Image 1 (tube, rainbow, N blue to C red):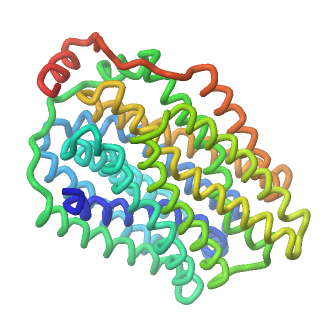
Image 2 (image 1 turned 120 degrees about the horizontal axis):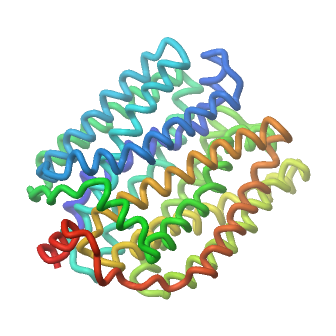
Length: 401
């Protein structure tokens, strides 16, 4: 049954490639469009904010859509937005295209995750989520390095055209392979806010936001950091990013295994502790320089990939376990929380680079994960949502349990 998720994996791959390749092509974009690296980094903030706030609104607007059709429309819009980005004549145009990219991705990813969980029994949901997210991590293994290489060999615009083609193939896959699933009953923003305000949900969403600030602060300027530490660019930078992507892929699959078998809160605490060490090593790397600096940077990237990418899979499994009937709501809220953290992280990285140096982003990321670990320790073991208050949500739980 898991093989039927392959079109969703391809869609996630296209979205992940576009989302994360910015770190590799950021210097090229900044130079071509005549802006500073810190200004170019705002493309990440723009994308993340549009995703964070647009995703729940789109979830409300699309609730009545048949699920397969929704996935096709969202992924098709993502392909079109990539084409617009490829022909952007100015930085403002590119920023606007990134908003459209975020909105279409924000409609696709929560729907894809909820679709995957609906197709599988509870014992397989962790692996189903991990498989969808394998597309995102495969993007860091193949898509991001390939995009970086293409940008160095040809032009950064070609990378957006390549992603547009991938997304178009994904639309065909969804159309031909996935079964039809009926739309869900529309749940308005007030009801979603009511779910988001529940203590059990706040505990999980708060951790998502805090824990993603650091990784996105580091990821936005990863290409710049690698260039300063190792002196790499172009094809060599693509190799560094491929190593990170490979570790990220293994990490996401490891997260699916952990979500189904181990105590989730304890596992997340261990993950955050390891990330604190990993980001600290990445900030030490430029100061060490030479072989020692390279070793520190590679060690940080390997730890970050293996454990950082296990985090979102386990978090989503925690949310689904609170109440599977409300998964479409809680997963959408988690996506917003994730990208809110991403926006804050990109902004934090820009401040660190502008005020101090690119080496400071590792320390900034480590400190935010200290805060995330403190939050987790203070809010462990959220309980199942037993009594969803709003009448609409109560009906959903009755119909889907």
